[in-house]
Each structure stands twice: as structure tokens, then as C-alpha cells.
Image (tube, rainbow, N blue to C red; front, side, top):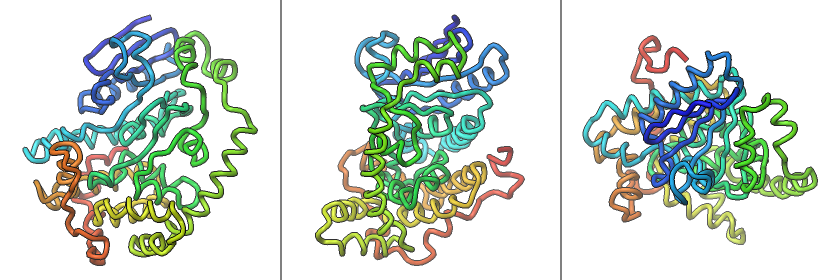
Length: 374
């Protein structure tokens, strides 16, 4: 067994397994540029190492001392370091560009990894955490899983391949999750195709400890216990009813049609609450996000990531500095914490036709795109 320790990433080779632990619990394991680079470097090295047959990734939580059993699991990754985004954008720091280029390249690497890659998606799994896990061969969730792509809450859009994996959800669930940023649990995640198996959180340490001592297939067959078929069938029936409700609203053509439909369903508590959520989001980025999901539905992963790289560039540079919806959203949520973003336009009704179009025009020629090699 060999172990490599850096500040925020723990890397271990145990038998035939390469093991990654996100170790920034006080920040809910939010990803920094260095963390992205460390993970990418490890995955690239293990990909070409014949002694490594499988890779697994987990997070730590804020309980106990780092590295002790009680500090492990209970949290996966809350996303990118949005405070860094805010500071870097205002300082015109080129590290911001590097972060998104390298993070999206890492997402592509995970989705196309030639060896089994296992994601232990316990606790918070949001934003960049979804980027680290959605490409996994086996995506494990627990009763503690809190999954979301909440980017519209900060004036962004569901990136890290969100267009690709959300658009593959059943019906119009992808539009619903992308626009609202709704937090879902393990059962919904499985039903929506965003996770593979649910296990008791208490069983995770033993599952992790057995990695490296057998083949992936043997580990999967003998050690990974799933919820019963009856439980899954019962949950699937409940989700089918909810999906019909989602599709009725989020399958409509435009954001304004969706919000009107929700607000007219006066006797539907869920619809009323959902409309209130959408009214709090950036109106402009709701339009951008809806277009993203629908474009991505006809794209492969590489093209989607290139599109998202174009989009995130425009989020910070189309209206630079404090004029950026994303900078303003992060300010309100994470910096000043007044929770009162001043969106521009301020209302869904004020977004004019064509306003979202500029986000989908690439600032780079095809042969100069930062993700041209994907």
C-alpha cells in the first residue's frame, strides 16, 4: 500500500485499487484548481499503470480528525470554490479560465475512463461534485445523499457536463433540475438515472476497505448490497407520478410558458412552490439554462463540454466584473450573504427574445478552442 498526501487530496494505492479522498471538509470539499490538477494527474497515471485495475473516489466530512474513520464519508463535494470564482473574476485572474478548462477536461476523462471508476456519493453531491461522479461506472448513493445542480441560484448554469447528463434524465426532469436547482435524495437520483445503487451509509467504510483486495467484478457481486427490488419498484411508481407532473410544466417551450403554467396551477402546492423558486433565480440564466439543456440533448459529451466552456466564458466576460450575473449571484449568496441578488433583467418577463443567444457563440475558432482536443 502506498499513500500520497497533499493538503486537500489524499491519494492511495492499495493492491489493485487507486483511491482518491477529497480532504477539504471545512469547505464541503469544494474544488480548487490544485485539487482538479491533483485528481487529473492521479487518474492519468493510474490509467496507464497496469497494476491499477480500478479507481474509487470519496469525500470527508467535518467530524473527527482528518484521516480518522469518523472523518470519512458523510460528505462528497459541494462543487467548485465559488469564492475563488468571485475574487478571480474581479481581479481578471487567468486562473479562473484555467479552472474551467481543466475541470471540464477532467470531467471528460472520468466519463471516458477505461478502468472501473467508483464514486461514493454520500452527503452533499452538487455542482462540481456531480462532475466528479456522473461519469463513474458505479455511482453509490446513501440515505444521506443530497444531490443537486444548483447553479442558477448564483447566476450560473449547470456546467461540468450538466447539459449532457441532465438532458438524459427521463422526460423533462432535466429541465426541472437544471432550472430550479432542486435537491434530490438517493431514490430520486436512481430513478432519474443519476445514480446506480443505494446502500446504507454505515456500510461505506467496509465497502471502501475491501477495495484493492479483489477484482472489480467480484467486489461488485459480493460486497455491494442494494436496496430490495420491491423497494425500488415502489419508489419508481411514486417517481412516475411526479415525473408526469414535472413534464406537464417543464416540457413547455419557453421559460415564460413554464412559469405561467406553474402559477396558474393554484391548487397544486408543489407547482406554487416551484414557481416561487424560479422567481428567485436569475431570469437571464434561466433562459440560458433552458436552451443549454435542450441543445445538449442532441450532443455528445465532448461537444456539450465545449459549449459549456463557451457559456462559462460569457458568464464572466460578456458583462464583466460586477455587471456579471454570476459575480452578483456569488456576492449575494457567499460573499456579502445578503441573499438579495440584483438580477438584470430583474424579472422573467423582462428577458427579451435573443438575449440568451450570445452565450452560445463561441469566442474561439474551432482549432483554438481550449477543449478542442477532447
